Length: 192
Length: 169
Image 1 (tube, rainbow over the protein chains, first blue to last red):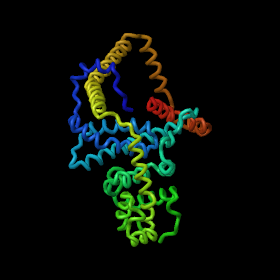
Image 2: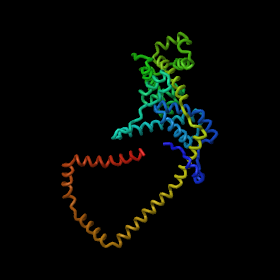
Image 3: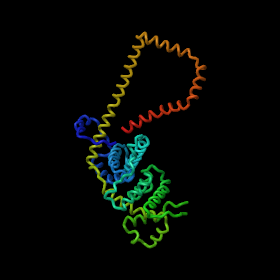
Image 4: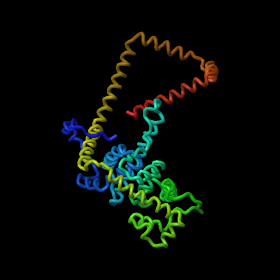
């Protein structure tokens, strides 16, 4: 996990100065990109993991890995997709780790972090939405959030989630149906 | 086969996000949504997602970009320094292994007790009749299958438990 630098680390800066930090961006470009995207990435992580604290940690890790990745980007969209792909993988790994911990926790003192998005201050409709989202699979949450909150195209969603574009449409359709049912806005009906 | 997309989906989505749905849209679009499963789902969820998006983004406490950059620099330098030190560690391990090997060779060459013990061990192993032992070993394993399975499980599970403990750290 991303560890914050303490004041003691500052005294070691002289030693570390010899080691180079090769990033794909300079500071100015990074700061502009971060300011444009960080809030959206945090919201995505918070909604997919259902855990604000975890989203805080994963946000910093996401940007760090993005900086370290020796990627070349054709466009801003491509760069943004790569960022969300890193965030998705980190959220997936975090979930996997929490499941392993829960499975091997003999004393039961450490359980999987259930979706615990803070309802305080949220409107009633938003609270209903949070509850409905928590009942979906993480991948479905990610798909729906990317499609309807981030306005990503089908090919972008497939790219970010590592899915085949052809299989995305039916999956998104099923997830949308399930969320609509959970929100109570669309009754179950027979379809041709 | 169940349809998974509709040509009016984008239009419905735009209407919801621009707060035109349902009052300020064409009656024909409303009629379409009433009969289209895909568009009715879009109309049902799009507004809720958009509202949640606004609230979630407003709740986010994002660290300052300058601080994130600085922390990332520090971490990258630390990792680079660690990586640079790794070959030295490897050489040290090899040197230690060579020293241990040399020490063992000296001990083996000079200790008469060790040489005689080694000679006894070699002669007793050479004298074993494996064909005579094999049925007895097979019968022992078959008779204690549960014990053997338990031991095998322990041998497999202990490294996994150690790995998980390390992972938790």
